Image 1 (tube, rainbow, N blue to C red):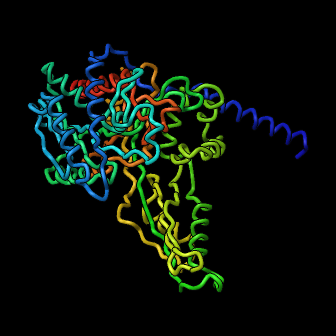
Image 2 (tube, one colour):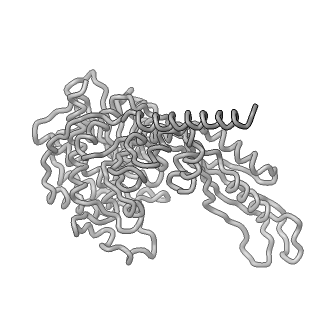
Image 3 (cartoon, rainbow, N blue to C red):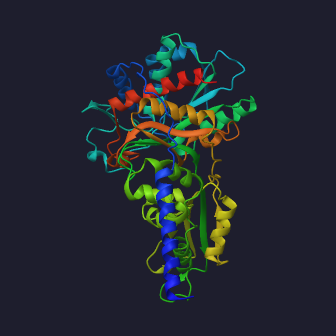
Length: 489
């Protein structure tokens, strides 16, 4: 073939690719639900903020080592909730589980309708030692200042819990009764494993309960976090990564450091850890990540719209860019994190034992067995012993976006959060809802909390807070969600 013909063929191919890229970019339809904005339910913002601030002052820090460590504080919180939300406690059935977990049941008007569940936990994480002075407001003072409720738990997760109680209390006052029975499930130890939620799930399974859908804490209404998206993005978690933790250990004969052998316990373990960090599990824009980007693409501007609308062509480039950020990298693969290393206790003694802990967060589609095989293949040293730790858990199933529960959450967000783009996302952390997989196919992880880039470090960090205006939105969200659920067929 002549050079001229080759050049012409290349030009035709480039033109065809260009036309396909332009066509996909311009013609890709929006997936956003068309709804009319509503007049939000009225909320007494000052009174609601004061009630949340009061709950923040109660130091319900959970402990993995001692479930009764702050038992008196949890008792204080339960008494406080009974005082502040009297209708909820008078008209809903209340059951207690484990050390501190609560289950409220609000009977619906249609006994044949599958119930729904709202979840939120009472416990909070401790303050990192040495950071107390860095807080603008002392972490358990529960102060309302500059338009925010400040303190540990204001966001995670007392904000959700009290917003749900505020919504139900208001609906009860108006005489509203849900069509579906509503379960309010509140764990007392979510931050340290969720034994209370696990017990609730087991009891409900024994009772034969199946839920239409379950909504737990999760992804947020982000603003300015996603490049190329001009407005807020409400990401609804449709799946949760699994967690797998393995202990790697090496045992050799101990000895004096003056006569080291060619291979030491520390050296062999270090090599194994280096190999695991260098040989990550594969990443890909597939599954939930692909659904997320397919949904966001028509709402994007500029080059990001072009790239995300044409993943068939630009997928490798998009993946490479996303891998550079820890937060977006976590959406694409099962991650590997080296978390604990222990070996040696004297400067001139070769230890006979060295051990390390490696934590994996499993992408849906991977399994504990497949990750364990990956570790064995990468380490490739029989001297390195491998033990899976007991708190490991498989990734959740992926809940459908076509299901009624997702569509109700979607509609409610679009009605209340002006200009928000709704898209499915992947929850990379763990929630209490992971224990409820046998009770519903439709489990979603979403918190109606607005977050800008500068807010994200506040999660489990210093200066946790929620704006009073956003807290009002959260109350309105839960109230409207329950109304929408009763109206929808």
